[in-house]
Image 1 (cartoon, one colour):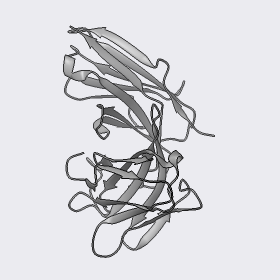
Image 2: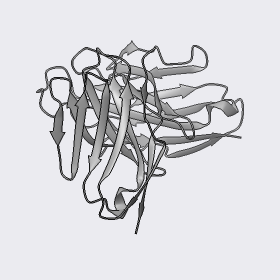
Image 3: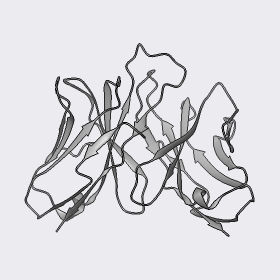
Image 4: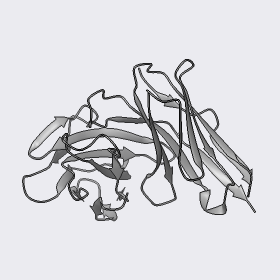
Length: 115
Length: 118
């Protein structure tokens, strides 16, 4: 079946350094991907998304890269801050209808920022 | 996730009781989704609804679970005769209708309802 997985379950990063979180997906037909941040006891918070007609998208301090050849997605966080400590999920939309969001989530990467 | 309202935030039920979780989508959104998150896991899709219609319930357990999104009022996820394995966080999400613009169209999650079965 289709799945979305992350390469590393935990990531420890020094404050001020850049963070890179990786994600592999298996459905080559997937055309929409989202990164979420989830803090303890809270819901997933939208960070950034990317559609399959792009290979890079930038937001405020975050960049998402999509490599469709190897089915790989990454989230880069610039100048990581203590407030970035959380669990990060990539999600793949396995519905191919516009505006229909049936997401498959990976298990998550726990990011810990060291002061 | 601002705007998707879920209640209760925390719910404790004894085995065999019923749990009802409510969700009001973001203003202007007509599509509602329910996801479940077990401890230390990612979210799993359960069901997708539009007003008065269940569009896709392929992730919903066949027994004891039901969902509705009536013409008026919030969406309800109902779990009958709860068991300890139902203990999880249940997240509702919403997205805008089909005639929304392409730009910025995505799905937003609420803060979740944490169900504990004792």
